[in-house]
Image (cartoon, rainbow, N blue to C red; front, top):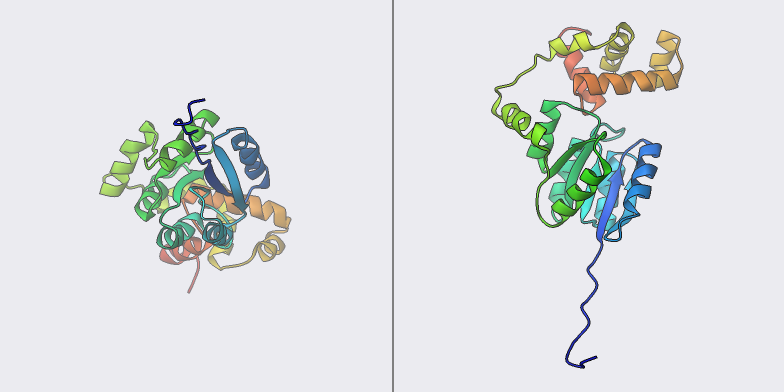
Length: 226
């Protein structure tokens, strides 16, 4: 080999942290992304507060962040991460198909937004795109984002109550009282696991990023007394 020709340095892998409270999804993403030569899983987090700590410690290129998680919701975590670790690019990966959450996420600093039913190839392309400095928002979400931010599309908060089953409405009222899952289970004579499932459904249907929003909602519309 010509001595004047120097071998090219290997391109650094894209480091990724995955933040999601569902273990099966978290492990599935780790397995999927580990197959890509240019992507390295730096770590994972099980809630919003853990995501903040992991990003602070690992300084990944990309963070895959769920919105609805215990201890600290995704938007709250994102706001801290953007301030403390501006070089980490965040993609929201969520099951919450909600225009308000979409707008809040982008306004808080996310550079990508995907729903959890996204094709694996699209997720991988999104990671590569944002790691290179770009943004990733599926075409079908772009118009919704513009309308949500401009305020032209407003769904009444109260109208969302119609999406809840009777049991979920009961759970919402107890969430408004700031009861824990175990206490709610005792009041409704159901298991704590069942309560957790109902709480997850309530958060998604109502577009709440955290349980504290349920308290404010219930007070605002008189579902509970101060």
